Image 1 (cartoon, rainbow, N blue to C red):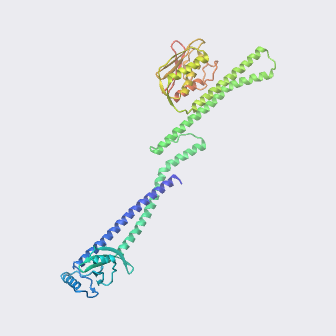
Image 2 (image 1 turned 180 degrees about the horizontal axis):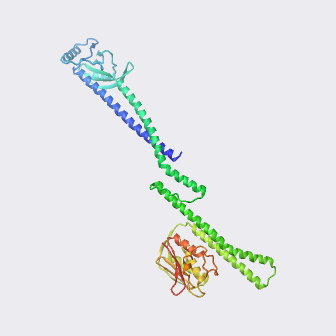
Image 3 (image 1 turned 60 degrees about the horizontal axis):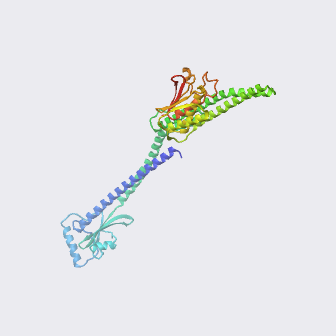
Length: 450
């Protein structure tokens, strides 16, 4: 079931339940009011008969003892003073204290134990009964001679309630249909942007087109579309970066592979070479293999840094810089001066240590042998200074690009990925890279963290 169908079903059910409860409440209130109106009529009529304000039932059954006859004579005397008569809108009947019928208006009313109890002095009772297949409501009220009973035909009330049930049922059905229709119209309007978004995602999947959706909306769907656009932008950037990396790597790999192929072909053609020429040829092969190995290592580093999703942690960047410098000293024997200050950061210490190591390797490549390398950490910035020829102004904005090597550095070993890795790590930690001319000569290359 679709989202639209589920929402329409829920709305329809809620409306039907609401209308049903309202209809039931209206029916119960109407039913109670009609019953109360009938009961008020019965109570009033019974009181009028008991007090002699109306004539008693005209058909006496038999003569009772003198007391009963005297009581009826008293009621007849009272009736002579009023003009009200026993009306045909209700049946009336009197019973003595034993529960026997003494007079009736034409049709005997049933007498049960509750009625006899009233004749013996209990409070009035009202109940429903059926006479000649017609519904009646009857009251039995105390009377000086026993009790008086009044019954009223409530067929009209039942017909009213039946008509009310039919009308409320029709209203419920009509309202349910209208609710379903309105729910469908509302959900069609509401879910249309979602359908557009779904169509756009299917288009992306089908065509690999990462063009943003640009849905101009300010509601929740618009925010979802904006998030989707940002995701598409990130995917497009990642794809472009991958394509550039592959193209640049192919370009860089072409030269050493060509040299390797030429040297191997030469060895295949010439079976015997002078020892010096053979040593030079093998040395060239080893250099090319070393360059290829370094290139592959840096490509792996670049890809692993981009995909590293290690959880961030809090640490002191000064300790990371100290560890990187110490390992660099042991590996190269190069003199390194270091000045740091405590710098609490949150991020990936392994990545930042690799960034420092790459800066040290870059400085070692361009610094004269025996010259020290300076490392400083201050104001959340790591700067490594060499004593080399420096970096030309036109090259400074490109030194952190992948595979970029200035004309002065093309004769040096390396693939041009070391500083690109530094920039990637710095950006992942909310920072930037810096390059400038060092005081007294050389270059000062570094990065900041956010």
